[in-house]
Length: 251
Image (cartoon, rainbow, N blue to C red; front, side, top):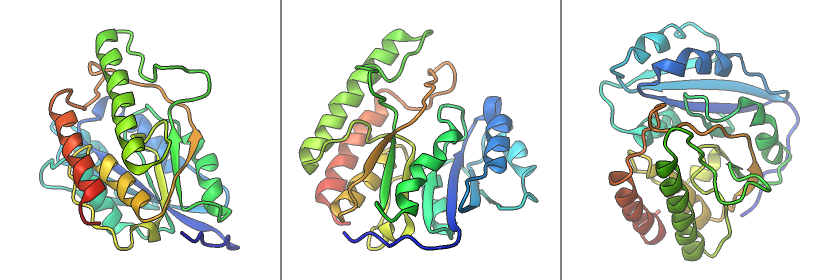
């Protein structure tokens, strides 16, 4: 897959932010996103709010008149994947970046994630939550250690499945920080509505020749008590179906 040559002048980054029931941390997170600056980049910020039940929509609506911000207000929650796809449909940037509305990921990592794309070295970058020396555990929930252990085991099991089926080696294919040039989506039809979009997006980009570069990032995992929304039975079942469709189904 050819990589676009670097160009002079600012590139445009579309930051796609799905939001649902994040009121506890939302104001802090959105203020930081709105204020974010990356040298050499023009930022477009798209908030997709999915009719939360905890007051998140009212918070999101206060950003309506902010420069660079576009609001998409969904009539009901259809899942994170659906919200992200809605954001992609409205995005106009050269590069897309998925950003959650919590405080697990650091915005300080934007510059190093974007550098390989700005230089024309890669079309697709992953922000890996596995940093050198962290060993097995990526999630460390002080208040829910058993759940953290189960999620870490599942992470490595599903990572092996993706690596073996695609003939690649990735440490963190499920990271939220998926950053890629907009033309990577050419010829790809995304359909997933929940967290299985992570699988579909990653595998279809790889199948079309966009092999990701993994770059270590900062990560502060939150537990289920703190608001993590992954369902430990339903979502893994969906992920298996998403793997099969994304690996063997049409693009």
